Length: 256
Image (tube, rainbow, N blue to C red; front, side, top):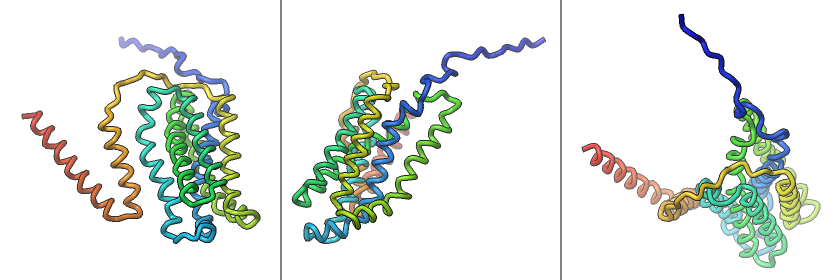
């Protein structure tokens, strides 16, 4: 007669935090801010062209530079979380967004506006993956799917209201008011993170392969830049094919 065993619930099945969404509040606000910043900036480009007497192509670097910063930073967040406490890293990321917003709002020349925009991209590139990494540890396994759905709603709500909100703000004030709004939301996100976020990710201080980090930054940066300069994207594809060929050759040699 086959004996059946009943699984005893473990502590892993219980909620790790009494109010997990409260713990995640600062990250939700930061992710919303990052997507709001991305989708609302297109509305301000004509005003930037008039304010600084620049071409449309130059003004579009406000979008490309932001995405480029995200593309370079995002792949590095995994090992950063293993070296730096998650709460500290999130606060630094949100502080970057706050500083970048203030710099762009007060900048007298376009170069400083763009510099502030890139700093904002660094903050967004850290916050987005950290939010999903934290969800896996803050919520019990049975609720991770629902938590990811909430995070998706937070992120997708920003593109819905971003262009309209930016248009209203520019019509009532100026393009600088958009960055003031970003600064205010960033300050709120910093306050929420400092008050409620609990570090759920363990730091193990693994060895860092700097060559891989540099290659990743160059590769992802070129992929993003390829959205504006087609020949860069083509160059990345050529390098990628060569790298894959080299990897396959090494694996085939290892089998032999």
